[in-house]
Each structure stands twice: as structure tokens, then as C-alpha cells.
Length: 535
Image 1 (cartoon, rainbow, N blue to C red):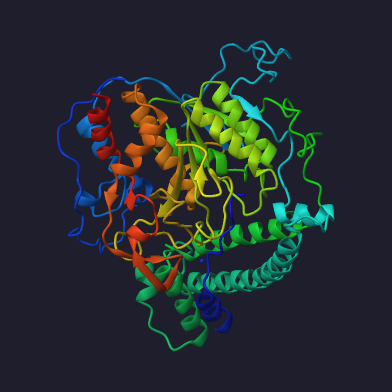
Image 2 (image 1 turned 90 degrees about the vertical axis):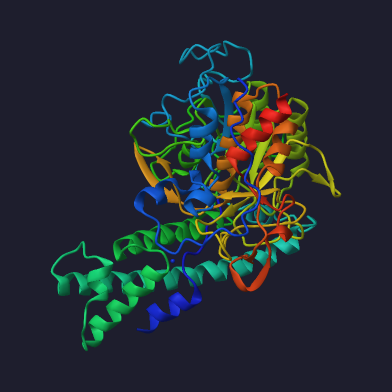
């Protein structure tokens, strides 16, 4: 499940309602001490917003992964080996202008002949496989548990309690967001009328002097939105509208105990059937943008003059559609991992997760299978502001505290400002079960139909790390997946400062206490360490 996050705080709501291949040459030593890094006080430029995850903390005072520096000083014009990266997600727009030249193609399969030419069990799997068929909306896993009515299920009582809380919460969200939307809409109309134009600026709003109570309220709304990272009330309306869409989806589908989302004819509780679904890996509608966004973070074609640059420059994206608008099925995820491994992927990105997993053993076996076959599995930590050491998030690689794979890496999300607010407020964390952190808030990337947008989540942090892993595996192909994981963890920047955890300003801890490595991933350092290790 790509977890929905509220974009407003209770204070925000209160204000509005009263009045959200080869060995690269080592040219330098890694950057290790960032304690004296100055805080960036100016707002990010448009170019910085679109590329902040690739910038360098020391040079730019923005906590990116030093990707641009790695290309400029290490990679240069060197040729690497093509790396297949599987993206297990929602559909990917494989016709996108920034992705259509970086796709994996199954050359053993003849397109559209209705035959399984390569005998891998999947007919016409040209660019990957779609385990969902024509399905899109789905229930959450705990709702499925309740819908089955098996009160003997050990998770039943917990699921029932969670359902009651979630349904009440999202019903409240719906009411609040509708009221907030109307407040922002009204404020925007008031300011537009007063200034005589729709595309007014912050400076123009800040310059207004008035005793008119309606106009004063509109100014207050606008200033609050600006202080919360919005550039305009038009952007705020878009964010609230998107939030309302997510809330309605949550109520109408995710929390609907009578909704039937699985339309592919397969039994998700029977692992013996494997070839269901079809070869159409595209989104079923434009708003199914998550997979396209994730793919772009990894591999959007670099320096082609179009909207975004991916982290990796020598990648073939294998699209595996297995994540609906709701919770993914364990069976689909387990088979998706095995499909990726069996068809040549060297890295798998999993930007999904959930709190209940009836067949977690199936997924764990698949993760172990990936490890045995030298495949790195990069997994998003989740967006619940929780400690996953104490509150499980699936899939994971743990059985009674013992890891089943040394090639599974879990990633938390950074925000684009170094300092106490470095950790994205939505990001999960865990000293034992979150390995590293990477840029995940406000990330610009590809979306369907040749468009681009900014999204945030650990879903965005995981593909950033998958991209760095792809760089390592491309330029140092002799390194194993386990070695790549270790490089990602050991070569990052060690953050010594204290940070706000879980978005709670009362919870401030050393960065070192919220992840296993105590580091943020750094592509420049990773390539230096990879060069040394490959020798």
C-alpha cells in the first residue's frame, strides 16, 4: 500500500476552519565529517527543487546523495554494464518520453502472438508482467481479514479495533478536507479579485494592507500555506483535492468490507497457480502514477533536455505491476520477486508495504530466493511515522529476529533541509530494521502521459537508493549484491546532529539512533568504496 498521508496539521485545520563496468578512477577521498555544514537559509530555487536529491551537502548545503558530483568527478564518460532493475509497483507508463528508452525488453518473447515463447510461464511478457490484470482499487489487508469473518484468525480482534479507528478517522478527514478546500478556494478568489489577477505572488500578498476582515482572513490563509511549503493557493487547492481523492478512495474501496477488488480470477491464498494476469504493464488510468514516478527516480533518461534525471544512467527497467490502490497481496509480491530474479533483474525496488501479512512466509521465502541468486531487494520503510522495530511493516526479512537474506535493505526518507528537520515527518524509522536514509520528501519525477510531478514518501527514497545500487553494479559488476548493500550502508554520510523523529517536535533524538547504519546514502562515496572493494 502506498500509504496516504495527511498534508495538514490539526493547527492548520483549526486556523482554516476558524476564520497540507569498469573501475572508476578515484579522484578524491570520501566526505565523512559534516558536523560543520551550514544550514541553508534561503528557499530552494526551482532547479534545486527538481534535483535536490542529486545535490551535494557540502557544496550545496542540501542533503542530497552527491549524484551530480559522482558523474562529474568519477563516472565522467566511462562505460558501464547494463543493469536490469525490476520495479514492483503500480503500472508504469512505458511510453513516457523520459522512460521509453530505458525499458527492459524480453528478447526471447515475440510480442502479441499469444504464446509463451521463452517457456517462463508468462505469455507475451515483453516489458514485464501484470499480476493485477485489469484491477486497480483494493481493500486493506486487515479489511480482508474482517471480510472473511474468521474470528479464529489471530489478527481478527486487532483488525477489528483498527478498522473502527480508521473508519472514524477518515470520515473526519473527509469533513475537514472538504471544509479546508472551501476555505482555500474562497481565500484564493478573494485575493484574485483584490489583486486583479489569478497568478499573484507571495510578495504581492505580503504587501497588502487592509482592515477588511474577509481580505485579512484570506491573507492569513495564504501566509499559512506559504509557511507550510506551498508556493501558491493554486498548489494548495491541488494538494487538498488530491488528499480528498485519497480519502474517498480509502472510504469507498480500502475500508469497504463488501468491495471485491480482485478481478484476475486467481485465488490469492493458493500459491500453486502462478501465471495469472497479463503482459500489459501500463497504468489502468492516468492517476495510477506511483510506479511511473518511482521508475523515473531510478532511471529517467539523463541529460536529454526533458523533465527529470534518473540516478542511474545504464539501466533497463523491468515493470512488474503488483501494487493496487490498496494493500498488495502477499502472493502477487512473492511471485513478482521470483519473476524478477528468474528474468535477470539484479536489483528489485519495492516501494510498498503494509502492517498485516497473512502469507508473510511466502514473501520472505522470495526475498531469501533473491538473496541466494545475488539480487538486491530495496524496500521502502513506510510512511506511518513509526518505529518498525516495534511495529511491523511488511515485507521484511526477519524471522524471530534472524535475517533470512543479506541482500535486503530498508530505506527511510530525508527532507530537503539539513538540520533538525532532516528526517521527513512521515518516515518510519528503526535502529535495527531501517538500514539507511535517502531523499524522499518533495521529489520531482515522471508521471503518466509525458508529465512530471513532485511526490513524497519512503516510496521515493527507496528508488533513489536502488539507483545508486545500479550505478555500483554497472561500473563494478564483479561486486555481489551483499557487497553492494554493505557499501550503501558503510559509505554514507554519518549524521551526528539530533533530528525530529516521526514529525513529533517533542521527539528529538540523535540521527544515529534511528537507523542501523546511522547514515544517509551518498553516491559519490559509494563509488569510491566500490572501486576500493572491487580491487
